[in-house]
Length: 304
Image (cartoon, rainbow, N blue to C red; front, top):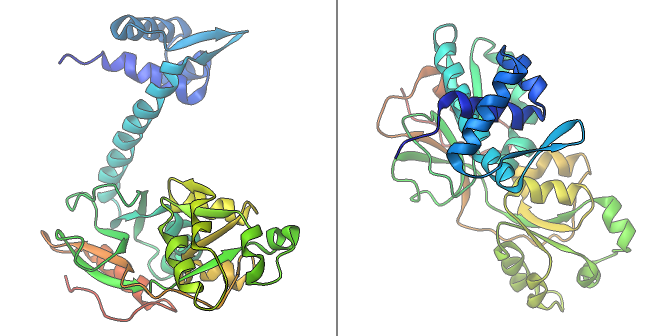
């Protein structure tokens, strides 16, 4: 199937990202008319309007908004990979595929320690969801939550225990008047990707508290853990999450446990490294550094 002209796609991507034909033209070092012409060519090729006038500016149509998500992501991937390849010529690089919530709540607050010990190593962190496939050819280290045998293309090493607990922000609990577990039905339950976390926790908690497991059927399901965690921190409700991945928030009291009851699951946060090729020294140092941090499981990492 014939693809649309690359220059037309590039023009649309710049306009969609910058929100302006003028700013897109400045970025691409071409005239305003040239960008408008490329947009017109792309709309003719697709057969749908992608951009429409909005006063003195422009806005994307519904089709344009949908197209923007894919086109901007595609050009972003091309840009990132090109920068990674260029960077290999100047300094060691480790490419890390990481779950968004883990990256924000556990990894990034500690990265200053790694950069202090390895200032010459560049770390390229790629956010990816649990359902995204990990390519062992383009990822040096991946962080996932699951069982050791779920990732046949990778060596899997447990990093954090999978003990899950319910948490909420102190401001939210004060706002709803929460005092103890008897007040749990008054809380809005937040869910990461599915309702399984609250379902499992409520089934176990009923042994100690008179709670209805069907409470898990209520509340908002977020498409990834980072959004669910952000909503919890913002005081939108209570969330069940892996305790060790949220230690920074618990120690800072930005999140507090609702109960001492935790569910010890067979799943872990895992460090994954490709089986099909030797591990670069930069990736070896990164994996070893993560497993040296407080609270991690000390089982060692593969040798390069």
